[in-house]
Length: 361
Image 1 (cartoon, one colour):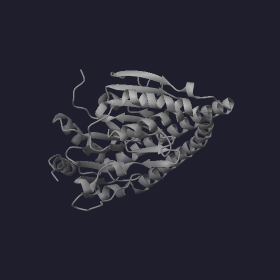
Image 2: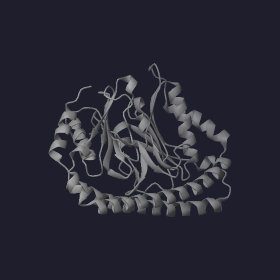
Image 3: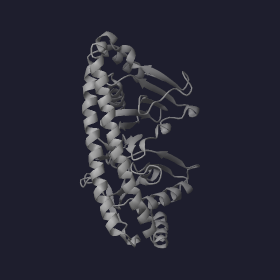
């Protein structure tokens, strides 16, 4: 049975065709009483492990929190957000480098690099530098394939935009919004931005368990090209915000500036997500909430079908190669971590963890 206590998981950064796309400015709000602990230190210094311990203790104590996973390795954490406490802990290293905005009063740096043995590390200097360069090269190659994906994706998107029966689509969106989204008594709308999916070393990962946690009903919009689905989500988002609802809008990692992939109306426990041509077949098979599928082909009068088909084929190949390079990058990263692990004083880091567990701003 589903309990009232839930732990949603998202990404705040994603590997995209235009490079690493960050939503880390959504992490905390210093002028609204938030405090952020920014962890610094190399790989293997215990940043993710520290956050996992805080998350485990928060779960046991039923302290509401949100987990932010790492797009370079979804098993690792980039951040943990404690909403009611207005506090967060974040990995502030590349590619999402963070520094204090109001040092000491709204945020602070915790440098885990203070607890490594520089002499031990010096013995592995040449190996570490070589591995770091190798890791960087894999990431650069992965990005090149994602950029190529983006060109083909944008080509298809332009064709789809020209093929949409806008009158029919807009009429449908109005009916859908009126049916599912009701007026609310909230004084003002609230919008959060999160990624619910990312291109990772484990493939194209969709955090579908978040839908289970936050929603009572989910509409799966079956749209191979994502364009019509995104238009529906944009309409629903605007409609929900006009009635002062709280929403989580999730950009697509394939076009983060142009397309939405998911929308969650949190106060209504209602969710929408686009299933596209690269969504793994098994995704959404574990949903334990009420859900239904909506198809978008009825709004299209397709042109240039051959080019669309060609673009879909090469997109899958580009994505496959991008993921393959991310996988090798993680393998190299794991080797780097092991070299740092042997030089760390984790007893001191455990004391930092304990201090953070009892922290009050």
